[in-house]
Image 1 (tube, rainbow, N blue to C red):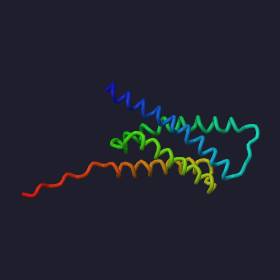
Image 2 (image 1 turned 90 degrees about the vertical axis):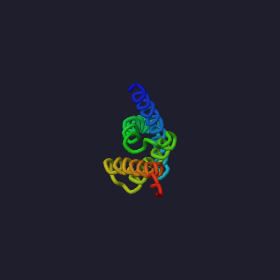
Image 3 (image 1 turned 90 degrees about the horizontal axis):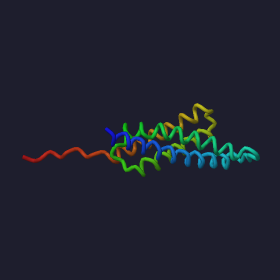
Image 4 (image 1 turned 180 degrees about the vertical axis):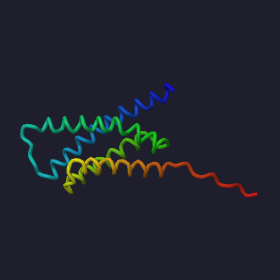
Length: 131
């Protein structure tokens, strides 16, 4: 039981850190896509994005890992779902989905990436023996 709690805590912390980095990268992509120059609040924008990414990654990564990706290597689960989440966020902003739609697009892309990884790393069905 203690091993499961430790692994879950590790996945949560790693997901939070990767989520914070991905949120900062998504904020940078958002600024470059819109061409908006933030003069005084650039540090506050990145700080808010990183805190949000840490919280979402810290809560969502253990849930998606235990539900969908039990056999997926941890580095692939972290990086690929973070990239998909970032892609969904940038798409939501670029297509002007609004706040709820953008968060939904980001989480939807993360779930799709998790399901793709689950399928890629599933255990093959046993081959019946010829009698």
